[in-house]
Length: 164
Image (cartoon, rainbow, N blue to C red; front, side, top):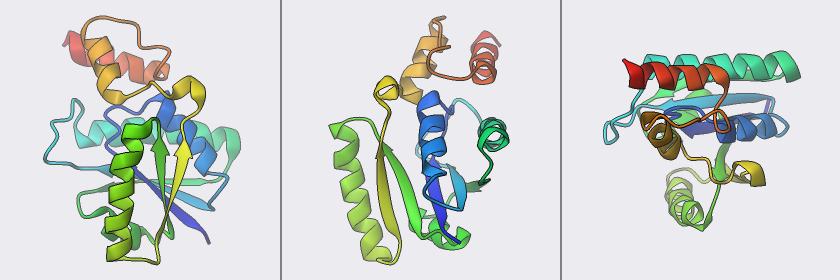
C-alpha cells in the first residue's frame, strides 16, 4: 500500500489545500493529513478545531472520489511522523519560488534523516496560487469576503472566530 503524508498547520484549511489533497489522492492508496502542532506559531484555531475542519473537508472529498484519507495530529519531526504513519512519500504544495527555497532545504534535511522517504512537490493550481492561510485570516479579520479561498463551513468558522 502506498501511503502519503501531507503535512501542514491548516490554520485554516483553504481551497489550495483541498486542491492538493484531491490531486495527491491519485498518487497514493492512503493519504494521511498531518495537522501540525507548532509551538512556534500562534494558530487562530486550536488543534481540535483545525483537525475537525480538515476532517470535514476530507469527508467531503472521500464521499465524492473514494479513497482513504486519515487526519493525524502530530508534534514531532516531520520525518518521524512519516515513519509513524508508514508513509513512503511526503506531499508538499508549492505556490511560488519562496515556497521552493524553504522546501528545498527541508527536503535536504529530511533526506539526511531518512533517505527512504521521498518528497513529492505539487504545484498549486493557477487559480489557487495566491491563497495563503495567513492572508485568508487577515481578510476575514478585516471583514472581507473569503468565499473564494475557503469552503463555506470554514468561512463561517472564520466569521464566528473574529466576531466572537
